[in-house]
Structure formats: C-alpha cells, structure tokens
Amino acid sequence: MLNGLVCKVLNLVPRHQEIVGSILGENYARPITVLIGGSEIIMAVWVVSKSNSRINALLQISVVSVMNMLEYFLVPDLLLWGKMNSVFALLFVGVVYYNEFILKQQL
Image (tube, rainbow, N blue to C red; front, side, top):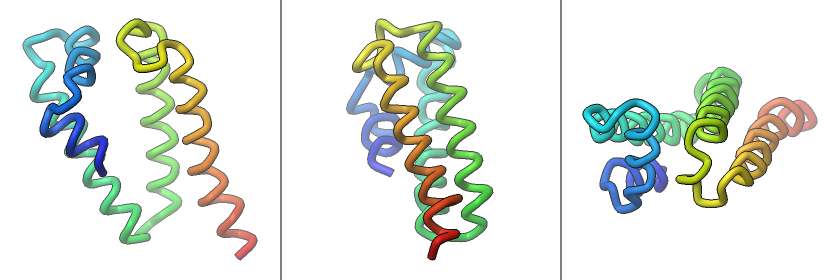
C-alpha cells in the first residue's frame, strides 16, 4: 500500500518513475507509474479483504517475479540494491507462497 501510494502515485521516490521511463520510454513513465502504484494499492486492499486469496497470491508472485526480472536485466543500475534486489524479491515471493499455500493449509 505505502509503496504504491507514496513512492509511485505521489512520486516521493522518483527512482520508480525513472525505472519505468528507462524500460518503456519517458513519454509513458508518469502515467504508467501511477497505474502501477494504483494497482499496488488495489492489491493491498484485496489482500486485506481476504477474497480469493489464492488468486491474489499467484498474481502477486507472478507480477513481482516478472517486474524484478525485467529490472534485473534492463535497469539494474536504477535499483536500490542493484542486482541484489532480486534476493529481496525472492524472499517476498517466498513469504507470499508460504503464507498462502503452506501456513493456511496447516491452520
């Protein structure tokens, strides 16, 4: 929620828009960054709602994986931790997977 709103929609961390601009072109950077931020906000609300949580988890895993692979190969110099960002993305994906597909089964 915070990453989408603060960093992307409110543009308080311009690096996110720079990443989008480097990949998709500066003409589209701002509107696409706002769309990505808005999507993150919607997904956060979806997580809190607990509606169709498996679909949400699969979507989160897919989107985070694809976005981080693109960033890893196309703009690693713009990432906060460079190519090490992929480690944090993998950890996040692991937490989402564990929470939805392992922990919920045990409960």
